[in-house]
Image (cartoon, rainbow, N blue to C red):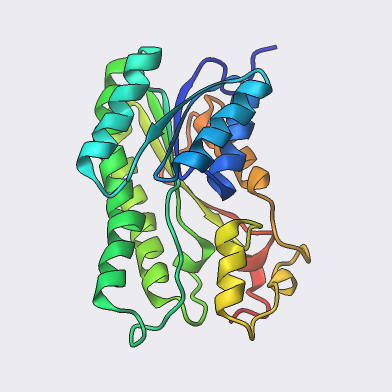
Length: 256
């Protein structure tokens, strides 16, 4: 039986931990040749090691997604190592707390550079290689907060709203190139960034009650949905904005 991502060359950004690492593990277990991309070398190499220990295929490439040189090098490394590029999971990002009053201009600029410009740069260099291969699939990580705001995350929410709009634009522009572009909106997921967010907002509970399923999600649960979108199965799906949030956006119970 053919695996969902059998032999598909797949870049995962932000793959040193959290959703990126969990997804990279899911992809590799389902046949992908994974390019692990992150600025965290120790964490990225650990992801590669775990994939290889489980019999998968992966390589590490240090990538600051806000750098055009790094983004281009990441794509070029994928093609050099495996001969082509089939899939991109553009996932890298971070979520500091703060209102617009609290957020420094420096932090605002860095958030835009990583969370939004990083998506643009990775897609800018990935799409031409996918066109050469005759097809491709991209999934970008936004957030349920990109459509349903919560308190004290103004800049982060702005970037994720931008990602959603960017995905729609790219889906339209590159459908004639046989490149599909979709987006996932995670709810609260058990990641280091999520733990840090709770530490920065001591008055907030673990948000489980805000999700219809009564719990927060695991990184691999996001990875499973992304894997489906990257695979050939949803061949008529592009420009989709898909919540992976345990029902949070269905009711927005207890938000904020």
